[in-house]
Amino acid sequence: MEHKDPLHSGLASHSIDHLFLALHREQFELQHTHARGDLVRDWQLFIADEPLPTLSREFFQQYGLTVEDWLRLSFVSWVAAQRDPRCCFTKETVIAFEGLNIPPRRADCFFNASSKTPADIGQRFEKMRAQLKPQFHSLIRSSS
Image (cartoon, rainbow, N blue to C red; front, side, top):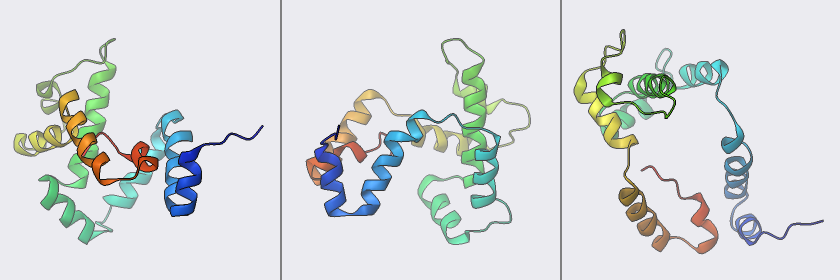
């Protein structure tokens, strides 16, 4: 049985890249548990021996921390969340994590960029939605 999805046909006629991005997000990202290989791949792609200096520089200018800071804070936040059955943790718990050694100002930049209230997410979605055709609304991410 063929499933008629107007999002997919709209994406296919607009851009095959957008179609595969949507399919990837729908079929893989939402069903995938990250493992050691994913972290190693990201480390090799973005951090080891500074392989992408222009991207690294632009990332730092936009977010106020390095890609390495972001990856380390993301991992430590995940570890902190796993320690509580409700996945609750505080920013202070992450910053105080032994061996993290990231200045508090950079950690604040991470939490400001990665943590959004429902109102923040709604405002961003409505702003992005006004700029896009309806078939692309599902591609809007909740983060900036």
